Amino acid sequence: MSTLSEKQISEKLKDLDGWQFNDNAIHTKLEFEDFKETFSIMTRIAFEAEAQQHHPEWTNVYNTLSISLTSHDAGGVTEKDFKMAKTIESIIDTE
Ligand SMILES: C[C@H](O)[C@H](O)[C@H]1CNC2=NC(N)=NC(=O)C2=N1
Image (spheres, rainbow, N blue to C red):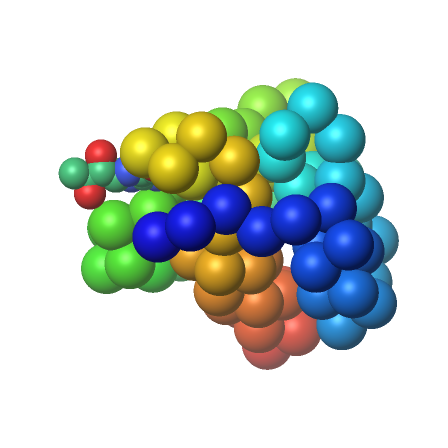
């Protein structure tokens, strides 16, 4: 899959709340009630990531979760990253 241009990325970011582009990836930082809720969401994201064969780079500290998405195979941001970001948003919205 081919990488998106910076212009395409900023257009697509308009459909996503709280995501930014820098360092060749799209990023968000989320905050939840407590560790249990955060890790439960991470588990759901993990199953979806496996299904899409597209895995986040992430850091969890207690109730915060920082996520970066990039397509290593392609060397930049692709549609796969936006698909995963949308999936993450839909998982969060059902909480
Ligand atoms: C073979 C396998 O599908 C690839 O290595 C996948 C796995 N998960 C991946 N996840 C992410 N975020 N980027 C990739 O380029 C990627 N490649």
